[in-house]
Image (cartoon, rainbow, N blue to C red; front, side, top):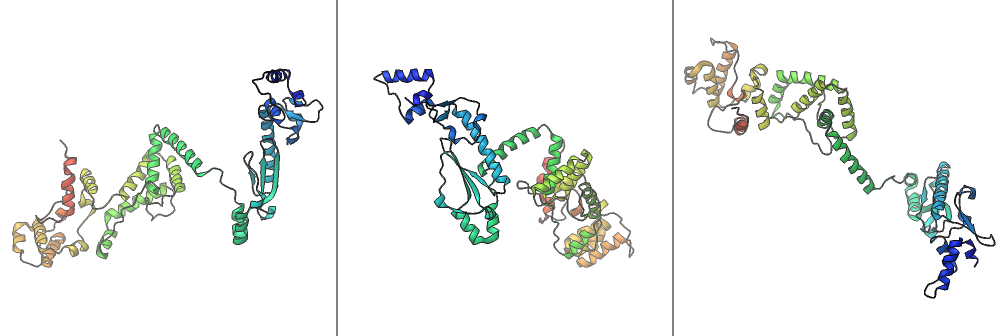
Length: 408
């Protein structure tokens, strides 16, 4: 009867109806309290907040000894706000962490060790289903405490580090949904996408593997020849201009071939956003040139498509003649200068002798008429062979891709 004094008139009538019906069960004792308060009878004694701040109805028994919150949802709203305030107060006081357990989860002191604030102790807050809140100050789990003792100051500092804000699966969820939205939006901004492509080509990433052509020389002779190449000097000048556009302090570095660092990509991307389209295309063109594979089929296709005149960029040098050691080839080249008559007249001569005659033609010495421009078949676009023996990869690659570029 004492519990029924806290019930409304309608609840009292419903309970009396249950009591009068032999086929129904009328709750009594603590079950009656749960029935009256929707499964939760939350005493006003457990509130962390001032009772005056609760805007809902508070019921009490006939004698006024016990009172309860009539609206459990409203109570929990106010109680959680008070718990959050208490948590913030602890953190402001310098506690390393405040652990808030799930409602109904117990704090097992036997599995923890008392640890003061200055040694990384934590606050553990427990909340019962009936609303009671208990704060356990200065504790570490036995595992954390053991680590602190065994690892000394370094491990103690690690124990104080806050746990991550999000779990691994949640981080993955966030990343994938944001990624989906960003790439869908990017499809409407091709100008921005172009700059991002260039930034990836310059820096690389976990998904982009862009490497500059290493230009590995077979020996020192080839290396020295390339270092003095007219085309290399012109390329180096353009590269320095592009590095200046990107704000690179190193004038001798490569543009492409970064380490794939995401922050570095963002830095290059930001720089490219500030450049006009023409400058962005200059950067892109140089990156493509740096990453064009030497001796490849696509390299041959490009040279033929651009109709590159090697005579502008290359002249036969000492390295070329040092590497020319085939007598049959030397004789065919000699025919380019003096015709078949001169070539046949020296067909049995050593390769060194025939190379010297070619040099005389190029220099206009020893009675030979000077030939100012000459390209061996190997150096032309398209490249051609001197014999039918095979073994000249360049000509073979052009033969493979030539049908793709035939114009009607």
